Image (cartoon, rainbow, N blue to C red; front, side, top):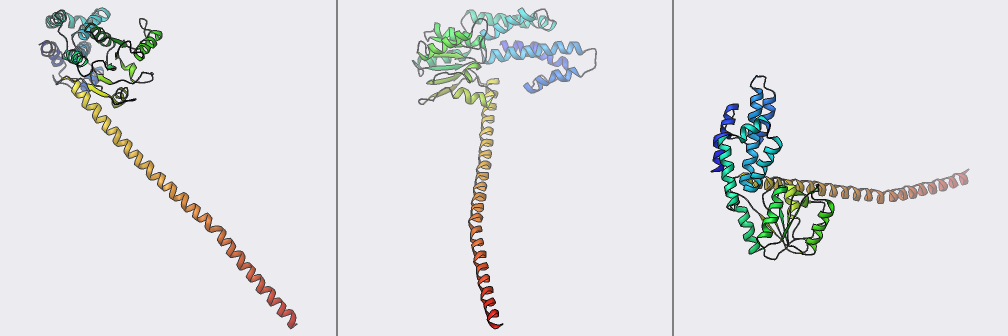
Length: 318
């Protein structure tokens, strides 16, 4: 219902005002700003206002579809506080449809209604992942904090692990990792900082709260389990949302990457064999060269002997 309010009412109105199709791919949405920037018209300012509304709506919809009500309301709250005086934000947040959608989400939060992913996560830690050491990867910092807190309240001790900031310094990062190593808690909820470059102990399982559209990040996250022993990987995907697109994008990129690696390995192997063949041929040539010298030397000795014998005959004759 909330998505219908956002997309059908405000989003479609804003898109139609630009003359663009209502349903747009993310790539088209990103390039839209460049198109507007080249337009020479008095309506340019208004188009940029609508464009800003579309971008924010797109992010709000993504958050609601893939993260949940908490992250969506947190973003809206920060948006109003930080950019509330800007025309696009005023127009967006003061529209009747937006206010109604926000009220519904706030009601859902009060009633404890969250994204189905949260229910699935709690269910997993109560069943197949019970008492196992796990890492949960989350795209957004505030969502990582929220999930860690919610899991702890539900009886599954968890800590968040995020990048350095005023409220979370390096010492706190190191202490969190040490406590995780010492099994003071079994669930580490990490932002992207947990993907690489940090000494995190191997885990029994890794959970993606959402898919990532990058084959490198996919591999890095998976690599946090299965080091010392067999591990498991779970990816939470919301059907019919950007989650599905990101999942298949990363899988396609990973397949392509391994295909390119195989091509490169085959080329390197071919070059290695060619190099070995050339070395072997060079070696054979070098082995043959001394023989030729010996043969020439022997021939020279024969010629010398023949000449000396002929000289003796001539001397005897004369």
